[in-house]
Length: 210
Length: 358
Image 1 (cartoon, each protein chain N blue to C red):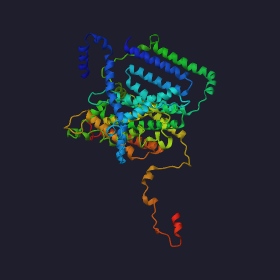
Image 2 (image 1 turned 90 degrees about the vertical axis):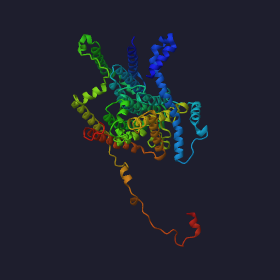
Image 3 (image 1 turned 120 degrees about the vertical axis):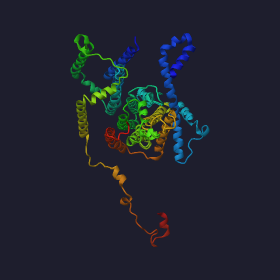
Image 4 (image 1 turned 30 degrees about the horizontal axis):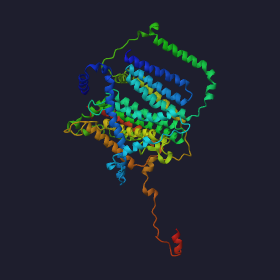
């Protein structure tokens, strides 16, 4: 067996195991961590396909950012497993339908011989080919409008999320650091000239107790 | 070149038993390279706390550690021995497996990133084209150790520390990545070696004043953003609210003891050295010599790394700790808009006749 094939099967096995554990793990935090492992194995598989840009992006975006936020939420929620599981049977038909659909789609890709999908042109990569550069060039020339459209949609999503969660509280004490920095001595300190000692009405003992 | 020589030597000395070694030779060679990089890194990580204590002590007009060995030079070994022999305590109802995975996951990414760091022309473990991406991906993993440790400790303080660390590190990662975009724009490559090489050319380099053509000068705002975001990313003072002693004791490390605590400690210092190396490579010209008449070499890189590390220690001795909401404000409302504007500025600059990078 070739070493690449061996690596493929190792990553594939890890991916399958992790994906299985995502849906079977009792603890939601464990499930999220198994999902991280699944992403890693997926990135490894992409790396084997010489799609290094996609593989590293998968790790950077999904593992480095999305899953961290997932973990945040899952860790902070007080999740009652019994209540979650009680609706298992009512959701089963929907879940099963989606699962079967995905299996069918994958079968069509993998069994391309019978469905004619393998008519797609295979490609051979020249040496020194950088698919990061290639992707960048395509994204910013040929597909620049769809790309910009996608980013605008994401921007709208960000603004919508901010607007949904933004609450203006009137009782919050708000600080403006630039104003704090700009504050001058004259505005806040007033020097008052006072006599060093009080008038002669008091007794010495009282002064000592101050 | 060196590999070929070693290969020849091995083939001649092993003779008939060479075919046994041949299939595993690439693996052995890779391991050797990794050891050659990691051993100095780990030694540096051990001695960095010593220098930190010394530097801060002198800044405070104290003497610092001076009891163990000459000038206190054996202090790190004494510290390590103490930590190794301390009892490792697991909190009751902690998630045991994850509790011990946390420290490992904190240290591993800090060492992983060294794979693509070039020390000299071609002196790098993995000379890959997507080096910068790999670095960003590796450094974005460091947070898992902290979050997992905070959650698995089953302690409020640890959890709060982990939450703070998570929010802070994700925020500053964006600023760091965007600061790097300008570097990538002017060097036109994701390979760290190429990025260093591209800093060695330009008008000033031709005049023999190479240090003026390094990225720090034309990209001065981005250099500062990267440096400050790097300090925040490693959770160092003045951004060390993650382990703020006066508020949440020691953050995610509060339940750890002995060697599992030491791993977090090592991870923090390994990250510091890594960030210093990256600042040196992206903005300070890596292994390039600052003036024309001196040869380039690894010495320059080490000097630059030491300088940036000294800045880290200097910051710690000088600045009071940031308040948490102001850390967030600095990251999101100051650095990220600044990066966006500067990306635009650099883009226009590159297209204008004043382009200095041709």
